Length: 179
Image 1 (cartoon, rainbow, N blue to C red):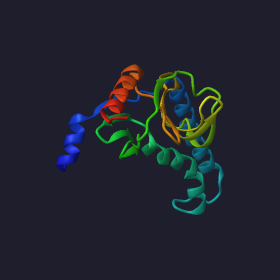
Image 2 (image 1 turned 90 degrees about the horizontal axis):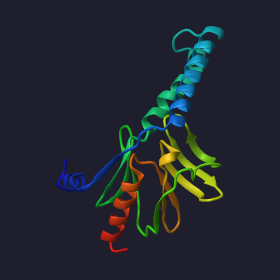
Image 3 (image 1 turned 90 degrees about the vertical axis):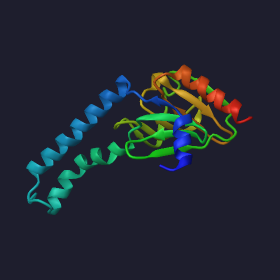
Image 4 (image 1 turned 60 degrees about the vertical axis):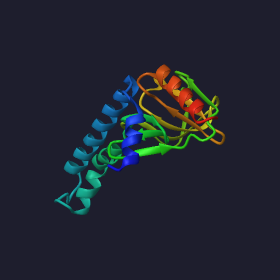
């Protein structure tokens, strides 16, 4: 690990992203449905010998669950370089330049529409819209822990395990950046 990454890791504050009840129920249901459909197609489709066309068609729903798993949100790191959303195998940076407002707002996601988003297969991630926030980018696992980050040209919503401490850390980050 290079020196800069070691310094960032030492100065970062990590917040896990626990799954809420809704995400647990939706993920279990969707996974069971996908696996059940794959099994049913495997049994019902003629010519499902390994690696034939029927095999790939029957495995498509099961592969969907495998494809969604790496995008799970494990947590969030706030450090010198801003916010990083921790995924299964990588981090997604969120630029915070010009951050105007950080607010804990449980229930703000109610009534949201998915524009281009995963709405419950291991996370709630992507682009959403609702009347209160307009278009926003979500990296969430539990709507009851929603923290809204208002930036000059966009809104981001995350769901850390301790929303009030996360808000305090984000406000401290803004103050230290001189904004």
